[in-house]
Image 1 (tube, helix red, strand yellow):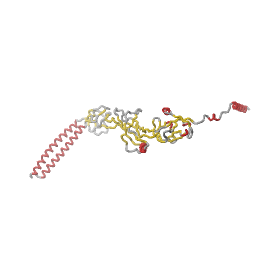
Image 2 (cartoon, rainbow, N blue to C red; image 1 turned 90 degrees about the vertical axis):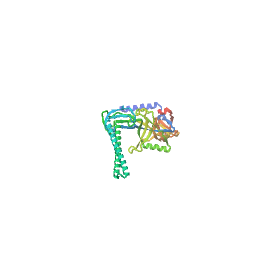
Image 3 (spheres, one colour; image 1 turned 60 degrees about the vertical axis):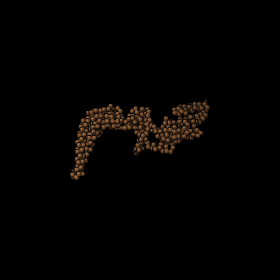
Image 4 (spheres, rainbow, N blue to C red; image 1 turned 60 degrees about the horizontal axis):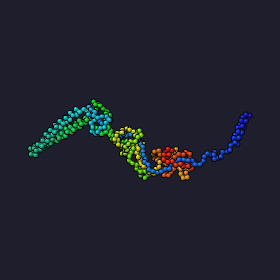
Length: 382
């Protein structure tokens, strides 16, 4: 039958092909053998600064809202919006006719009270002399003294009212409560303003020094404080760097000036305040920045290329290390920070350890490998 003949012919051809060529050696069938080559980097322990990068926004060091303390109509604005003002500099002038009249009336009341007091003083003195000579009665003396004392109190009240009137007159000239940069005016000439109104006339911000408030994990702060206490880390320097929104580094360093004495129970964060000099006014309130805050200096740590670190299903970092006899080991490490393309590891590795940077995908724990050392820029590229 045709089908049978086709199969028979194919079998014959296969047999002829096998007879025509010699058998392939077993070693060739297995492919190239021996240990796999891997690239390694020999580690050295050192001290590495632990920097916490925290986002925040710039705040003015001082802020004062300008409000009127007396009622009246604004007659003049005496400053340029956006300019720098000094403490006590005149900003607005309120119409003062009625306040000047109140001062004049208060001065007249003082003069009248003073005259009454002087008269009462003389009457009391005369009554005392008459009583001393047994001519006047004690009742008359008591009345004269009471009249004198009442006149003295009236004079004191009149002086206080005059002082109050003078203060109100003085307050018709609204001055800057602090030095700083003043913003836009929220009122115009001719507007009626009142003492203690909700809307500020303008806002002044002190910008020679600015604050940046950030939040830091209380757990991290406690961890590094404990490591400093145990000698595993040393205190970091006090200088704080600032990175602007365009990724440029602010040229002047700042310092940590205060920490909120409580931890937010919801987030577990503590608020830290940094201060930065701002002589050129580059830093403005509301500007987004990143603070590089030194927490500590990790002692006897190692820098491991990031591509050499893998993580297990639980997220635990580990590396492949070439141990004695060029046999592969797996090490669990503790990563504390990224630094220049490396992970800074504080535990699990030491000087002299050879970490596999590339090629660990082709090997396994317990396998023997051929390590090839990487140096300098070559290690960074790989």
